[in-house]
Image (cartoon, rainbow, N blue to C red; front, side):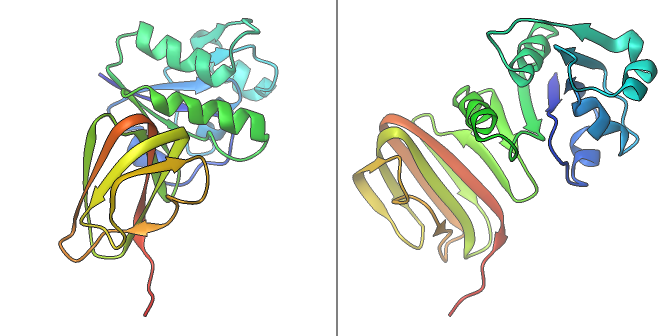
Length: 202
């Protein structure tokens, strides 16, 4: 079973497709974000300090209160989805707003069963190696946290056992002419930020 976790940040219209045939869990006021797209979550979980009265009334039967102050509402929703049997999780509505919450959400991507999605990017960990395919000049970035030893082939800019640190060094690369890029993480922690758009340039 796949799950979609929805946080309390603006959603793109892609949430409609992403929610199909998935267990949908709203993190607190993520429920309000879903209702704007006429999507009823299967569960709403959190400390319930930001969900609206309207959403609380409408979704009362599916609300699960969790007052654990050691975790964010997004983390609680992820835990709950796994408890319900989810094997893979996508998260939307996670970025923007408070930088501390955004960084905490980014940390969830280090679980290989979790990917973070917004309107332009999918973020996931690179365990050993990852192959991405797409049109030439499709954007992707790599972010080491705090560092990683990385090789990249098939990209506009390739790397060979290079050390990346948490900086702009791996930001903005592009799929090359073959339409296929292989990314290897030899050591450390590495996130792949895979775009779904092509950047025109000379």
